[in-house]
Image 1 (cartoon, helix red, strand yellow):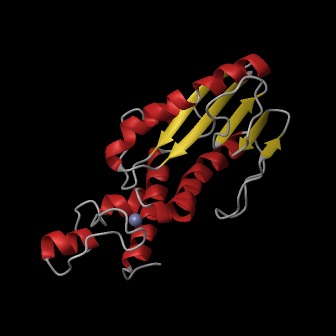
Image 2 (image 1 turned 120 degrees about the vertical axis):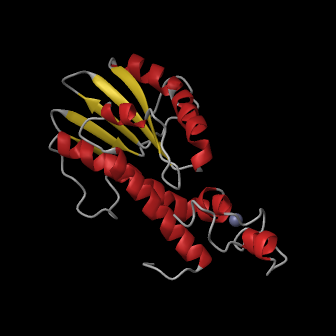
Length: 216
Ligand SMILES: [Zn+2]
C-alpha cells in the first residue's frame, strides 16, 4: 500500500520531495531516477534475478494448478523449479521449453504449454509482471508475440492452439480480461492467488532494495 501511495523513501522522492538528498538516481543501476516504478519493474540490475524469481512464482502457481487438474505430480515446494517436460496419457506440460519449429517464429519459448491429448488442444501461456500502468499493453504484446508459434504448433501438432497471457501489475493491478484468460487454463487459478504472489514478490524487492525492515 505504501508503494501504491508513493509513500516510500526512494532516492527520487528524497531528492525531489524531501530535499534530503541531491542525487535522485537509482542506487543499483544509476541509470534512471529511483522511483517506485523503476525499482518494482524497471531496473536492469534486478531484471536477471529478482524479477525472474517473482515471475516464476506467479507462473509456478498456474503450473501447479494445471498439474493437479491432470493428476500429474506437482513440484513439492514452491521454490522447486518444475521439470521441462512432464506427461501422462491425458496431457503433456512444458515449462520454459524451447520448441523447435520448421518455420522461424519470433518467440518459441513460452512459460508454459499444455497439450490436452483427449481434446486435441494446446494452450500457450506466458506470464508477465510489468508496471501497473503497462498491463494492457503487455497483455496485447504477449498475444501478438506468440501468434507465429500458435500457427506453427497447429500445423505441426494438428491441435487447436490458444495463446493465453497472464499479466499482473507489479503492485497488483489486473485488466478486466484476466479472469477470462485464467478460465481458459486447465485447473482453477484464481485472480487473487496470482495477484497475491506478484505483490508479495514486489514487496520483497522493495524491502531488499530500500533496506526496509520487514519480513525479508
Ligand atoms: Zn535501477
